[in-house]
Image (tube, rainbow, N blue to C red; front, side):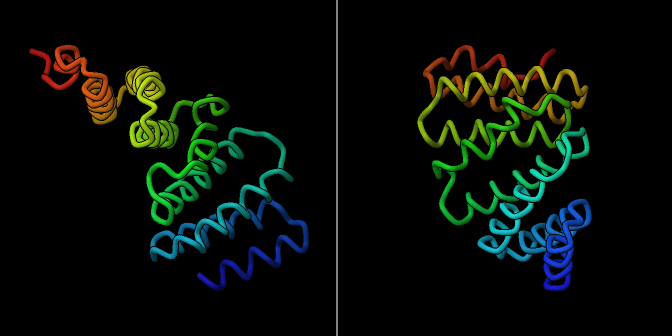
Length: 172
């Protein structure tokens, strides 16, 4: 882990942004795997700063999602599921990241969890709807099931239990 972080710093000082980002990402992933969440959060934030020096491309978008997921997971571990800064971390997936992917699904799922935990049930319902659309578009049965679970759980929070059954009961 330390070697990757040192290499990242070296490439940042050399203004070799693509390689700096590669090593910051690797370091943040390693720190997360070791439950070194404060270090992972710092590295993810550093990576997001490095991203500002790179042109907007689909690859840059994928890297930003990875960094935001790492930052979000670390913030949840450090500060809890309703930490105020989580909304900004995950809202990128809702507002700016157009490419459908598993990573986008994960980011939106976590944003919905943030809203549920923070009592913003209307926002959680909106996210659950987006998850259903995204999962259907990705044609992944596991994601479809998770999206239905998110919608069903959110409807229960709203007291709409009869509607929630449509999302929990398997289709005949």
